Length: 160
Image (cartoon, rainbow, N blue to C red):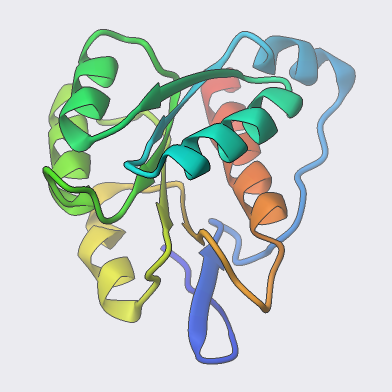
């Protein structure tokens, strides 16, 4: 687990410590179009805006409005990659991630939070996350970080 930090707030975490896009060739892009990204978030605006963005990157999009729906979606194999809010009304992101790991130990999970902190990153580091991305940051492009994290998760799936 890496910790990419600019200024005092952690803004994103990719396995190699970098931020930015991950280049792909045309064949990978075609195969990624079949992958479903599940966004688990309780904010309708985030679901709508990030859903549009995920579709524009060539992925299918599935949404869950709380932790329980997210767990059910993973259980029912409705997702290939999970983008998981850290703070949800019914279960916190760590509890949801632990349940997801009981169902599927290898599904790529990206923690996506408006409240990034060192403690939050520490809480999930042993649960095999693909990345930890702040929803909003004045020091980084959240869309670029999220796309890079999803692309990394997709590449892991395609390497199997």
